[in-house]
Length: 472
Ligand SMILES: Cc1cc2nc3c(=O)[nH]c(=O)nc-3n(C[C@H](O)[C@H](O)[C@H](O)COP(=O)(O)OP(=O)(O)OC[C@H]3O[C@@H](n4cnc5c(N)ncnc54)[C@H](O)[C@@H]3O)c2cc1C
Image 1 (tube, rainbow, N blue to C red):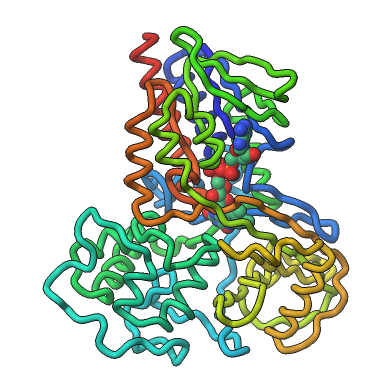
Image 2 (cartoon, protein in one colour; image 1 turned 90 degrees about the horizontal axis):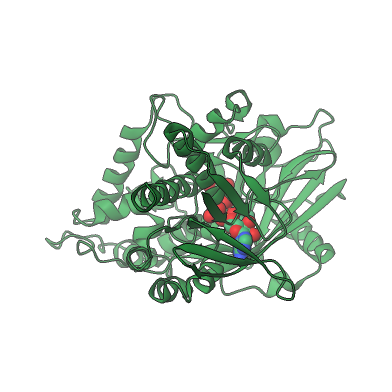
């Protein structure tokens, strides 16, 4: 029996590991093959090297409590996976330094008591944004009709006014999705708020309830975020070993078809294709390749997924000489209307104690590129580094010395832009899938690492159940 996972990002690898666990439980020994078009597995999880030490080129950390069913320690799926691969001792948590928002040339702390920038109490914004006077009235109806979806911006603008969206929600949501609050689905990007918005009649009540829901789930004293000392590529390597899978890199899957009652994958170069047959397939790739592969075997699913668009971004890491002063912050976000290309910066050496270098080198990473605005990404690496230095200097209020090392990571098609109705489209795509085929990953279930892990694991469980039925 052969099970193929297409896409070696964290979702695909989690799927492979889960299939292996299920097979072990059943005393079965299927061949599990992960096919990845890039030369390395890990997808958006990739650790690089700057000034002689590790730095994340993609994702930086993950939520401890999110994804799947929390274990006895309240830990979600990504933390559980990290422990399963033996990384418990390597998990690190961020410092207590706060994040800021750059408004009017000043770095102002992100107000407490907000949910991705949406405040429960608009009077506590400390002048960062002026809320509209009376938009959040109780009109006797829920904020969102049950089952309906809206853009985050549409809801928050109507209730709190434009400044709250432009100065708080948009940069916070943009920090995760590199997209605009006016285009991103409330149900897909803020599920906790969405759940409450279907019954609450004011936004302040919905946010307060969603914040309380989150607090109730949290185990006291448990940090919210975690990462792996040495880099998230260690998690990737650990999951590969756990899966005991055949991993084939540098090999795109081009077509998916049927061969009798099995699947047939066409892989490799168009001129010299290779065919690989499988009893079940998990597709853990972004939406466009997923839709292409589904075209003949599940055209309705292909249609439902194919319209999902992505934002491209670049991350510029700077290693600055020891003693470079920076504000005592974990980093900052820059609203789109403030006239900067940099949309966020993370002061790695302040935020993560384990990233402080013995020689005092200071690590900073800036992110550029917003959905629909990719002009800045056309610049050369050298020009991006120069631009980041110039804008960071402006924002922190002093010039920055020549970096001792720099690293530019470009992510084309990095972050899915879930438009309102995304969850319904995913549900109809899944309904249209034939038996023995499952979807996983950020194209369908959400961008966070824990969500991608859970998504991969659920896809594995589904194809395993399909196989148990069709090949008892
Ligand atoms: C710069 C950046 C920073 C982020 N930071 C965080 C963070 O700090 N915390 C967090 O929780 N999340 C973060 N995210 C989001 C998170 O990292 C991703 O959503 C998640 O890793 C996606 O995992 P995935 O397996 O679904 O997809 P991917 O990682 O995209 O993996 C899909 C894989 O499929 C491969 N593939 C595509 N087409 C084919 C094909 N035809 N054949 C074979 N292989 C194919 C791709 O090469 C890729 O490796 C970040 C994302 C980015 C881009």
